[in-house]
Length: 584
Ligand code: DGT
Ligand code: CA
Ligand code: CA
Ligand code: ZN
Image 1 (cartoon, rainbow, N blue to C red):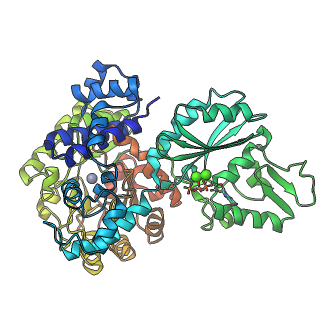
Image 2: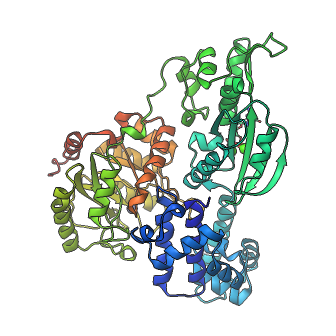
Image 3: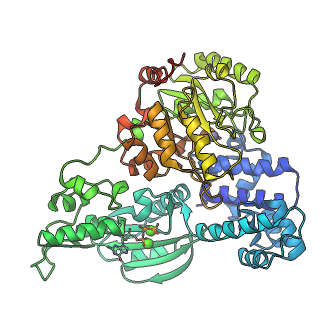
């Protein structure tokens, strides 16, 4: 089956090539939107009829027929044709920070640059500075960006990896002799990017199962295959490892292959001190040389219990103090997806989102949420059609008006308000006070010095009109580096003033990082998990935001989204240090 992630990747690639080819920007944008919709869509698009596809916002006739072609043939003739016109390496070049489709095309036409490697040598040789729009400064910054792009491109973001994994697990259910199946490795730990997929399988005997696995239609080529393990390269462009173990060892193997390596090393040392030994087959007495009588092995829970530990959630297994906490009964009770009652940060079609406020409200209701703050971009973000003051006021009225149509979910108006270069906000205070939830984000002047950027963000974090500081890093995983900022200083400023920080669930962003979220809580700040949804289907990115929160060790009381509507409105009206209470 063709996953939505693969469909999204095809559309994204279409958009890239069309842009490089200098095609109509509306056509380019249509493919980008289709990619966004496909990436977040809950049901496999290949299983939806043409008529129903057309009802999905962001999918028109052309896109729907492409989806049909993809389901039928697994490829797109338009895409194949575009691929023949340009070298494949241009895709990597377009992604380098500081370059875009126009520049990539210029580089190719003028200097025949068609890969990161040839770009690097041209930059090193000083050949770029002669081109229109290129200077010595850009040339130098490109060298750094190229290195970043080369390193980053090897790992897949967690969301895409999870989609590929669920597709593989679904296929493997039909394998001969399967008793149990589970994802392991960094994916199970919820790491923001994944190097390869690790699939664990319980069965008596593995040869037939390994063979089934290596013949899955998702497999591009087999790198290694034996009796109980296999390594394959998937069509989704990621490696996948399979391990088959007997059911009585499933828990031990799951523990072992979930990692992290550092957690396992520390666990093994603890076992040794207790006269025990642990491997992927079970927990044994060190004296039991035959390794025939495991003390534990069937489940992970009993492994941890026999080691004198509380069960450690996979997200915490990074050897950052979790083993001591588990020994002394001090593990946090981690926030769960079910604890989340709503979202703060998303976008409607008034700015760069795809659906109307009403459709977003309905989607929030369908998520089972109790409340939602419906957002948009502020006026200075012109590329995203940021709202003028009049338009903002009109949309606040609209949110109030549509409440009657979705009585099941309490609606609020939020805005992602730009933090201007000097740290002031993109709307005057009087206007900001009319917005229910203010998320403040940097969207411009990313290249400010660290000192300037830190001062800018500290000022915003200390602003009594700001409820939540949005994606504190500005990175796009694998594409754009984080801006230079002293995050610690900003977190301190926010914590002091009672401002919360956002954990953004967009697969490309995932900022704050787990470490910064942890730091925020230690400083006494609250966190908000958000989707930054640009399409209703992307409300599902909440799963990713919650995973980061869990990796940071957050509990329900650390996360604003766990508040009831009543508690939240109280929090929003809280008195701020040194200022009068905000009126709501
Ligand atoms: P990745 O794939 O780079 O995102 O990270 P992981 O953590 O998935 O690493 P991977 O796929 O190499 O191995 C999966 C797990 O298997 C790893 O988290 C712990 C376990 N493992 C692998 N190699 C070793 C090892 O040499 N020693 C120990 N103790 N565990 C290992
Ligand atoms: Ca892995
Ligand atoms: Ca692996
Ligand atoms: Zn946003």
